[in-house]
Length: 125
Image (cartoon, rainbow, N blue to C red; front, side):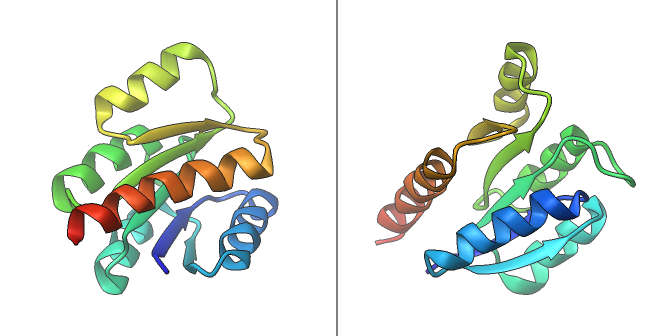
């Protein structure tokens, strides 16, 4: 399966995402700080990053731009409580492949992740 970095500083949200992703067979790496997320992507050869907007060390929006620039092959999904249409639109302009608002439905979350991973896998074939 895929290698996914979860960049989330809220332990409850992080734990939920980690458990869901592991339950379908993904290898998950969790970091609480954005800049650690960029390192984790590089060190683990990640396929996807799930990025919260509100991080303690860097604004998630800036992190998305950094990840897209350094790792253009990595799928990026913004997962944030700031789920208004302005932030959704902004996340796509910054380079996100998808946007998930919190709270999210479990099935929807997993469907979005799998859909974007299947695009990555089929384009690599």
